[in-house]
Length: 531
Image 1: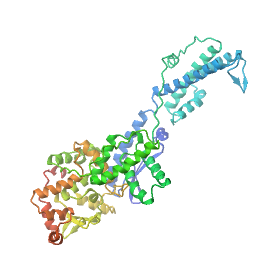
Image 2 (image 1 turned 135 degrees about the vertical axis):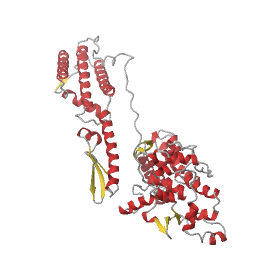
Image 3 (image 1 turned 180 degrees about the vertical axis):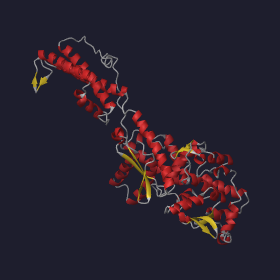
Image 4 (image 1 turned 120 degrees about the vertical axis):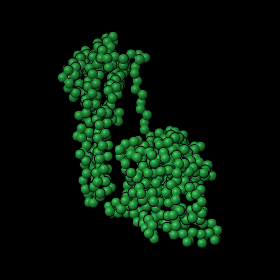
């Protein structure tokens, strides 16, 4: 059964959480927009979400929140603690001093052993009857101290109570004997038999406290700089997006868990964003200052993981994709069938034709930058003089504003069909599932995904970044004898010199540019994608 409902004009997926998992998941139902008014598209996406939810529920149901060994360790820990406390009281007490009291009144020493024996008998009776109530308060305290929140009707909670009852039975047996002066008695329950052997006590190392997540550290850092009068509003405005970008790229992991490999992956991500090395270096200096401050203020334990990993100031030449690279990419599960939308490196029967599918194809066949392709609106794919074109209107330079004809292969692969579907859905953007990133970039999250994906399919060479598609496009046209002025007009580079700047390329029509682009297949066949 596929679970969809319509809210306004948009379909949503809704799935009820099984009753036994509500406490562990923290909600009674799962709800997510399918970002489509088109029912067949919504149904396809809903099936994927339902399959993923089924797997999630199965994993949670088959994975206890505490293992049996961890529960046993909690009980042993409590047992050792209370026995040690009793030993301490025994050693420091005055002669004939009572160790127990009832209602604030000390018991007579001779009565203590009898009381302890009676308590042991009641606990053993509770064990025999599987009455867990006598252990509830202790179990709750142990779980609270361990930072665990377990539903009281779960098997794990019941096992905690059961092992605590066993620990109480051993404790009262031992203390009753010791109160009578018999220290030859030892635990007989196998769970606690080794707990009091001198030199053989099994200790539970304290768990390492988790450091704060990166986004929390960023907030403290910004606030500290402002309180200390070191930063004005302008500095915050330029610095905060870079810090948020770093935190988001690393999924806001705990500060002390950040590794140098994380930093390398972030550096690759910045390269895929088509930033030059000077700009990447600025990002490095900004984030490096964050870690230096965190270490000084005691907010992290690790040394600065960015040290020595910044790129050189001079930009290294980015590689172009070889025909073999392109064959690897366009034969990967992303294009021929993947397991599910969030695992496009694994083969499967799903084929999602969203921005992850189209952006590499568009950049290869048009030379568009990743941000230009990611920002495309439906109206930016338009006819100019009878030729379907990409229209780039908000580039950083005057030359960057241009029209680029659609390569015939993009039309054959269904790009105009996708555009029509978005228009019919009332969408403004070609890729409605794209979320704008922390620096206002439409391409941020795609590039973050792409940087990881290309490594997974064997295209992880250091200088092979998303910008390499544009480099491949330009190199192919140059090697094919296309005049430099024509190439610059297509890719949005300014023409140099007075003559070139005033006259170069002015007479080229969109039909002329289409004739140029359509001559090239970039060394790779895509016939298998048209079937």
